[in-house]
Image (cartoon, rainbow, N blue to C red; front, top):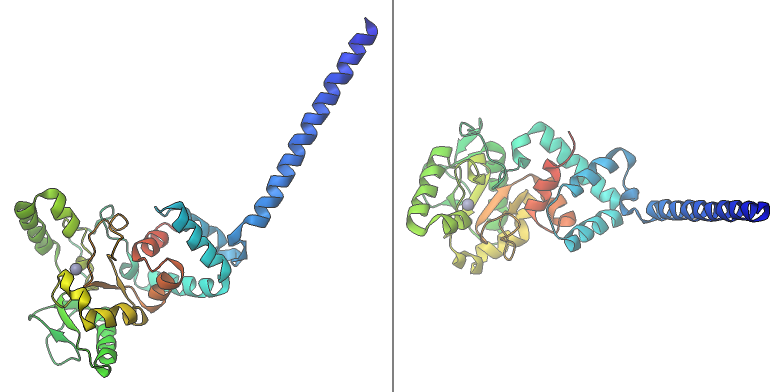
Length: 280
Ligand SMILES: [Zn+2]
């Protein structure tokens, strides 16, 4: 009786010791491997946790998330430089990188303070009078149009700043003509159009035929160098929520465009969601 009582205590305590040891070994192993496997540990410490929160805020497939993380981890130093530059842009001019999409609207009374006219003599052509852009977007457009012209290409500007009220009339007309679902694929409800930012340019014909022009080909290889980014790329409709628009470019600044093209799979929506998901 005494012996079996003693024996069962010994068995229980050795079982307890085994379980405790297994648990200890498990946690030690997982915490070690977590340290080893954290690919973003290569980032400078002062930005590491912000970058992780920004990436966690992205809505995207696991495969896309993995390739973004891998790209950053492989070139952490270059990423850190561009990231800090983009943060400066956001600080100095928050609307350049402001999130505006189907889940994030601009106030109805938002009118950029630095709109300037495109009428006059410039290295680009315009398809109508009285178009306006924000000053930094116009300056970048002039530099980009000069570079295009040097290669024999004339950029044709067809639509730029649109007020909330104008976008409201465009969207309501589309709903009447094509129904709500289709209107939402091809146009933005008022407040949700990037055109209200005053930093967007529609080039050329504003039709799918534009993609086959020399102008479009030049823009798709060069716009990023001047800080412009194609907002609604081909095959990406579920991400920004709009049909492919080969003609619609948004000025986001040169460092942000480079950050997008090198680290965010060339996708503006990913970059903007990442930046807007950063902890304040
Ligand atoms: Zn547009």
